[in-house]
Amino acid sequence: MGNSHGSFELAAEARRASERFDDCEIKVIRETFKDLCHLSGDNTRIDKETFLQYFPLPGLLGERLFAVFDKKNIGEVDYEEFVCGLAVTCRGSWAEKVEFIFNLYDVHGVGAVSRGELAALVSAAATYTDTLFYMLLKLVV
Image (cartoon, rainbow, N blue to C red; front, side, top):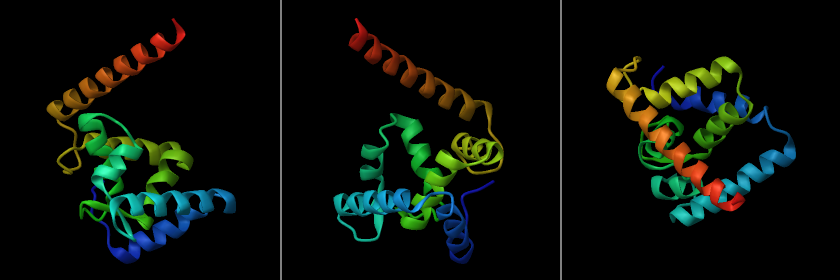
């Protein structure tokens, strides 16, 4: 359950991931990826700053989401990683989503979640949920 993937393995995984979307969705995913690459100043990768602007999770949650998408662990997300991450989060099986969440919480990538990692992410999630709740409450009231 780590973040290390060979390029051949990831390419095959990306092909399988693409099959979870219809042609229109793939077109939107490609266009979104191109737009994010452009904002990153790159033609083939999304940098962390741009990724976190598009997926605005605060603090540790955003950092961990980026890290789980960045399977090659190079500090940027390429198209294969992008489509694989979206496939799991949007169309993944229960088991795939559980593994994704586990990897989100496994901050040190050792195949286990320590109490400290769990506490830090639960705290970050609670803070985010509270913030989101209060923002929605302001809209309603």
